[in-house]
Amino acid sequence: MSAPLRIRENGIDLFVRLTPKSSVDRLEGFETSADGRSHLKARVRAVPENGAANHALEKLVAKTLGVPASAVSVVAGGTARLKTLRIAGDPGALAQRVEALG
Image 1: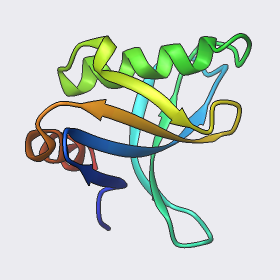
Image 2: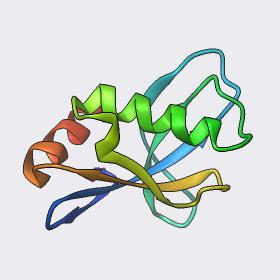
Image 3: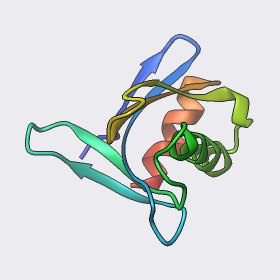
Image 4: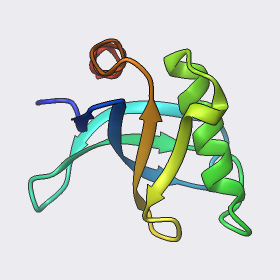
């Protein structure tokens, strides 16, 4: 399975399926949905109110990939379970780190 990302000029877009109100904060590898799209599974303890779960997801991904929290932002799916995160940085290095998560 290929990594759930799209290379951009100044970083990557990462496709994530988020489960809020979990018992732990963690990334759980790749998954393919029924429509054939792959995404990274993530769980956060935060509740999905006032952007808390999105913020927790941004911090978790930043820490895991070794980038500043300010380099990660939710650009699509703010209130949905399936989200697109934009991560600024070297696209090649970021893609390798994401692929290592699978």
